[in-house]
Image (tube, rainbow over all chains, first blue to last red; front, side):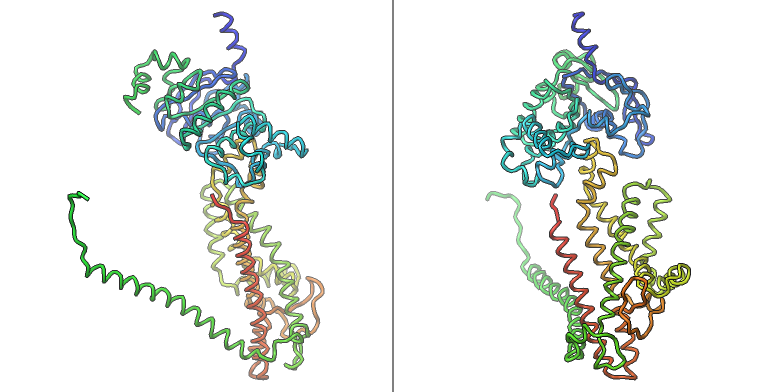
Length: 260
Length: 295
């Protein structure tokens, strides 16, 4: 028990302390406190509009692309506040990659999509770029399907393949965290299963936070689950505990399908 | 087959709607034909008038007061010179302005104010831009009626159109592509350069080329700038005085009362001008088709 406690303490990637967020005058997140441990998969569940996407986009400060957003509180990433003036969002985002709801490859070749990140961060060596592309595509379980057509346009891939390409693209800048905002909501069950399998493999090397609408998905893939409701973090616990023995009545109502 | 709702189709109404449909087809095609007829008449008249006049000597010859000897080499070089000034100036200034307004400027009162004024500028008559060019480039910067002064004046004239067209092209770039780039740790300029501009490029170029072909055909601002009626020396630099294709059409048409053959010269010049415009517009279409991407 004691040893376990120590392990989590040393391996904390994110520590969110008293996070509040407003869109103009509407408060979207209220006093959020949680910790995300290294190599854990954290699922974020809750009904639409509860702030789960907002929360995940705050972790790499993508939320700031919306002009009216204001935040208070701290998000410590490896002990450093990401809202600190000295933190460059560009650097933060190479460490914290993101995969979106709808696959969003660039209208370029498969290869160019994967090496976009390394290239903009200054890698010119052709051999190295090819190596990065191969490793990333292999990690995203896409290599075997695309190795013969790396120069084809990414829009020729199926939806599921496009999403794995986006994961490969995120992996190519060697992040340490991957944020996923409902990554399978636009995919069919088979493509979804492949992504879930992939997430399970990726957690050996990466820390993953995933927003999902599917409770089954949260149950299948995550180690911990956070339940959001109307901008508040209602409950946060190990997934098996939260699903089998929720402490809060509202969590129980939601996971048993009584609302949402 | 066991549907409970039963209804009958009113055959009279159907008939009427079919004939209305046919009628509307003719009304709409008539509108198109009207424009085509006007164009055909124009082409026919100038075509007939230019027969025997539009030949190699006309294209490569120098200006002259004698119609048989007159050629438009100087005017062609003048028009090309104008383009060499207008294209870089409008592309650089216009696209930069559009990028600033679309990507960097804070959306607020100031941005809206600038926006409205750019749209207003687009509808200012070209004569007024000529006066502005005369005052600023001609007199203040002492460029006289040189190619540079003319090119800068024409650039001012088409800049608003280029800005608005480029803005529309930038607006049409889907937000998820920007997000994808930001999420890779790209900053704003990298995102614009690597993702936004490549995707918006066909739209930007189409708008710019169409605006520039308008500049080629402009006469009024150049007349106001004080282009000489007869210029025998072919310009060799952008600081030289010049004449351009539409100017030549204008002056020759004015002087038909003196020499009837000038009308034939004007017609031949119009053919050359129309051909140039046709080339520019085809280029715009080719660029649009070549770079068009599907999302």
